[in-house]
Image 1: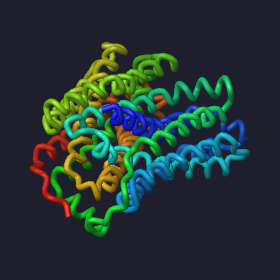
Image 2: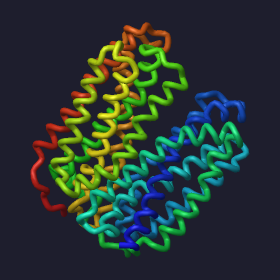
Image 3: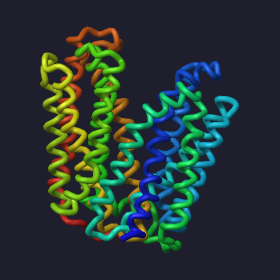
Image 4: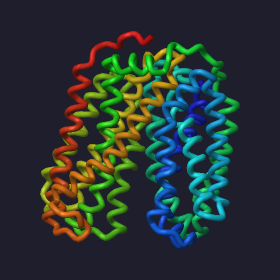
Length: 405
């Protein structure tokens, strides 16, 4: 039990660091633009380079972990991430900073793909849901604390501190992953990667889990994209109060992750996946039709329902997807799970953002009237609820797992 707890600590850090890598740098973009005398478009690559590298490589890293040893690749990924973070903190110019972010993305791809895959090797089967809930909590903590910690570090110590402060955490994660995670020797491939992917997509439960993960992630990104415009443009909140209101979602997700995992262990993955999806649909529909006169509480309370339901869905869905995957394929399937989430996040930022501006009837949402922004919010969350309904339909249609090749 003690070794399992220490292993979970190592995995938790391996999940926390990539999430921090995504969120902590965003707040420094204006400062970086001034420091390097660069355009906003140029400094955006500090964020884009990391996300793009992680998304492109995550499945491949999961498969390489299956073939050549997951602990070996995870330790290497943590090492690359930590060294690249130090490079970012010391970068003398913007191009070298972007190169450092690309290397960070390489390490993060290893960590995001293999952390979930290790749960089956370090945690008793009856506690898998709790472990998945804890990892979801750590991801949410990284996302929630990144902007606040980054803003404080930039203001007090300068932009380099947002990277240098992460290096000690990376070193702790490196030592723990090397010392406490079980060695995973190279395994013979269960089949060609392309054939394995076809088998995964033929498996109704796996396909439903991956598809629904993408749809739900798109909806969660929608709350981050639409929320600031609605809170400021419709409800009239100041930037500081907008930040407070927007922080409620990640905070609720962090607090409910572990209880959601325990509920998954107790009531089963299917019931909890369905419960989570129904909660997200209900919260999205309430957000869509809540009148502006309900004030900030009328927006935040449905947001609490959505994020708590998301924590339930994520713990249960991750457990369901990984539950019976053969050990030789866990890294690959874990990588697919992370890829589906990233695709959903990017789709939520682009597609749902386009729906919001289209429904508002103007490209300049910042200067739009309150009625226009409210209309955009309404129809965007109606579409969001429809997407999750499609995911719920896919889950309800799925049957028992077919054996993988």
